[in-house]
Image (cartoon, rainbow, N blue to C red; front, top):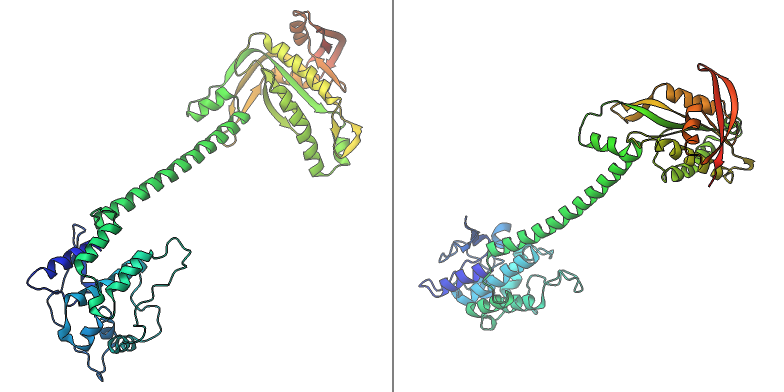
Length: 420
């Protein structure tokens, strides 16, 4: 709008004195984003006469023409150009063509404007909700209506419009480029906020993924996989392995639904998970009602793995005594626990849902200790017993020799408790 007024002001102070054909289609933007006025100083080739029949487009072309010019084309003047400015301002603010909201034909509209009416027919400025913040500002409407006043003497001079536009811009000499830069800056700021928000969401999701990965794999292994490093299988000279399962699980499963079984295992293993989080151990896996834990890998902890597994087992056994099965409150849940200490190999197996698996005779022996154990008791091998006896803090009871499948005669012990 600033460029339009500047151009019109120049024409009005030039020998041309008037534009005489100002409309939005004659306002063109050059390659430097400067709006320029064209078709000035030209007379209309088509004349509207009272009973003439003119085309639809021809009548629309006169929407920007002042009423006095419609009556007498010789009445072109600066104030007639100001009338055109009011119509263009309407288009700029509402982004619609003049008289778009009326059902009258262009020919009828031109006839009414030409002949005059009370009140004069003009484009509708009350299109938007007055409570809407995006509505037309009152001072813009006032400028519009003053420009298209019926009496030409009541219309402002171009110089006055220029001062009003400058006041609207708070004294800034704004142009299309300035407006574009403001819009781009606003868009960039909004884009930065969106990027920050998406980055924050990505960081949160990354943390969730890392947490999930570290729950599935040991932290040191998960970090290597995240860095795309090769995880080489490793041999550990001495670790302690824990196995447990639920006594009478098959009988419980027979009288329970699948959902009840899932809920039972979830409730029980949630307790186990909370307990093992306080010890230097790693939960290897759960298969059905079997629960497997190891200490001493993937990070070695000297001989401490024996006492870590023993203390954890005692706490689990103590906690299980007060555990109630939700759908069978009268049934007392009991578990068998087996422990064994020895060498073990470990490594990551698989690409999809990789698992950190243990291999070796120590795993089999720990499983046998659980299988040959008894309800609510901790059955340990002789090697685990020897490690605990060196501390002189654990209460052990020799069970005697057992013929363990695949292992032959084995002397085993019960872990009864801890002296302190």
